[in-house]
Amino acid sequence: MASLQSLRGMADLLPGQIGLWQHVEARAREHFRRSGITEIRTPLLEVTELFARGIGEATDVVGKEMYTFLDRGERSCTLRPEGTASVVRAAIQHGLLSQGPQRLWYGGPMFRYERPQAGRLRQFHQIGLELLGFADACSDVEAIAIAWDLLAELGVAGLALELNSLGSSEDRARYREQLVTWLEQRRDQLDADSQARIHTNPLRVLDAKHPDTQALLAESPSLASALSDASQARFAAVQQALTALGIPFVLNPRLVRGLDYYSHTAFEITSSQLGAQATVCGGGRYDGLVQQLGGPATPAIGWALGMERLVLLLSQAERPVAALDLYVVSRGEAAATAALALARLCRQAGLAVERDASGSAFAKQFKRADRSGARWAAVIGEQEADDGLVGLQDLRASDHAGDRRLGPVELVEALQAARGRP
RNA sequence: GCGGGCGUCGCCAAGCGGUUAAGGCAGCGGCUUGUGGUGCCGCCAUCCGGGGGUUCGAAUCCCCUCGCUCGCCCCA
Image (cartoon, rainbow, N blue to C red; front, side, top):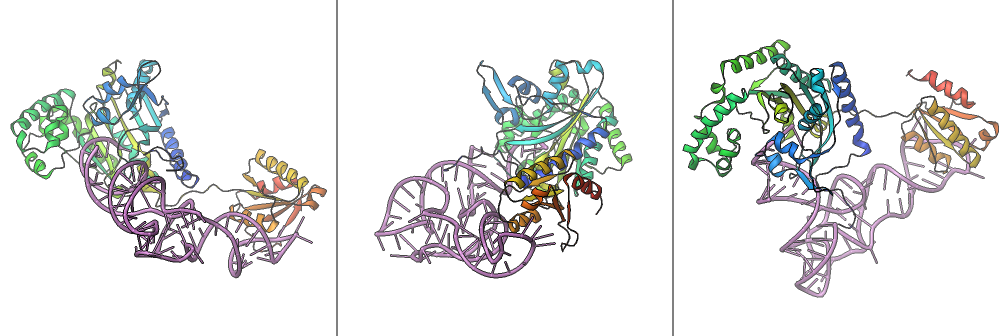
């Protein structure tokens, strides 16, 4: 390549697309505000150990997808591949948990060194929710409902909520043993990927895509039956509450989240319109993580939502356009200064203004005024500059009958008065 | 990391071994020396992602490379 390019998997967000992103971000912000959830911002870079311990050494994310390097002090640093570990670290580090339960959200870029694909980038963006210090089943449902309602509010259609329970960490450990034993007995019947995972991440074998492996798995010990009575009751309570809220879901016993820290409720919100990367939002309960990272035993639930995937679903719909109130056209040096002063005056009054700086023919400037989408055009030529006046015309009018000539202050007042009216 | 498809102007796109490399949109200039949305005229790729090779001759064939894309893996 002759010219410089962005790194693979790292995308620019251009002016034409940014409106949709800002729209989503604004809605999310407002949605969290109404839900009593406050934002937290953590660094993009963390000590590698945080993710190794938090997410799990055996996971793909940690094993092969992290952007890790040594800094000048020879410390191993990693660009965050997800948000939860950082939020939990911050909560522990600053003693937030001793101030009571925390309802937090975050947003921003995450980094995973993977092969880019539709809805998958190396730098991608997530919005996430973390409820720290909440143990009851209704908190699981509240978290899910917040995600579900946000998506609905944004007008995303055709979503499905998939649900599973991984049980308590004891349930999971017990089941893991059963499963490993069972898998080992049939090791030679498994596909290569699954064989490799028997000890590193056996639960993931359940979700193997290989048809022969899937057929074999039909008779494997089930996770559901390994759940303790308490865990089963808890899962039932989650389902009841979802039903009470009218949020539809499908049980997916093979839904095993990739990161080690999940327990009990695990869920994904998926769309069939996204191709292979169908998950828009995924999350679950992670009761053991806070303690594992050195904090007080704290039950927690959270989720992360993929911005790129969400925007992909939304981009078929309409996108909001930032409207300009006024476009200022001028000719001549004195007029240019007057135009600049007028633009500034209007901006100070809260109007959105663009000034044509080209100095080209009026016909040309008006053509641009029209295309800018501005509601009004202001004209300052030699004549107006001399008189200290400004020509004002309605760009929506088809003739010049309504054109006026007035002073800058009157113009601002006129536009403010006209604002809000069609 | 592994497979498949693709890569011509800012965007869309013709071209398929010998063309001055169509066309449309956008942009710029003009018709209209101070007034827009329509119309008309003109300008806008010595070059076809990059590098090698085959050939008298390549955007068109081959190799390598980069990038995009789809799937696998995994996840948001």
